[in-house]
Length: 232
Image (cartoon, rainbow, N blue to C red; front, side, top):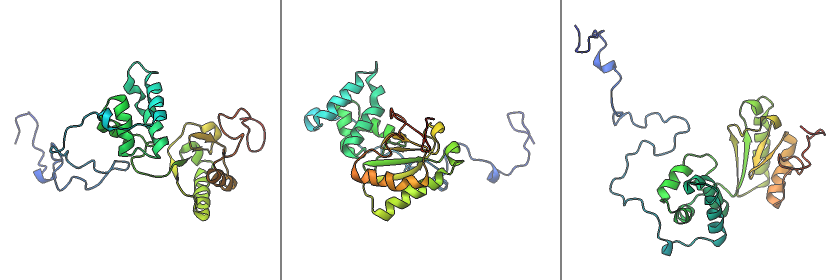
C-alpha cells in the first residue's frame, strides 16, 4: 500500500505516529522543560487591552533613575539597546523588576511594559519577583565545580540561614565567565574569588554590615591578590 508522496506505508499505526501541529490539549504542560518560565503553555488572553506606552503625566519616575536611564540611552544609536542596563538600574532602586519599575523604565524609554517584561523574563539576573536587594551568585559551572564550588555555595547559604541574613538572594549560577578565579561568586555584581568555605562568615557579615566583602579579592580591586598571596 502506498501514499501520494511515493513513500510506502510501513505499517505504523496512526495512534503511534507523532501528531502534527500544536500539541493536543491533554499534552500541553504535561512535562515542562527545565528552565522554562511559568505560564509558557497558557494561551494569550485576547481580551486584554493592547499594550501601550505609559502616560508620562500618570507615571512618576525618581529623578536619579530617570537621569540614569537617559544616560544609558545616549550611549547607543538605538535607545532600545539600553533596555538591559536600564532594567538593572530600576532593579537597583526597587529591589526587583516590579510592575512599577517596568512602568517607570517604559515611560522614559517610550516602550511598552510588556516589551520590558519579555526581556526581564528571559535574563536570569533580572527578577520579576522580589528576591532581596542583595545578590550572591555562586558559580557552579564546570571550572568552578571541579574545585568544589558547591561546597562554597552550601557554606554561604548555611551561614546566611544560621545568622538570619535577610533581603539577600543566594543561589547557584551557571558560569559567570571568570574561570581563572575559580571557585568564584558575584556578590552584588562584584566578582570575588578564588573562594573557600572558610570565606562564608566574612561574606555574610559584610553583606549584613553594608561593607565590601573580602577587600583585595575582587576582580576590579587594584590590590587584587590570591588568598595565599601573590596575584593570579
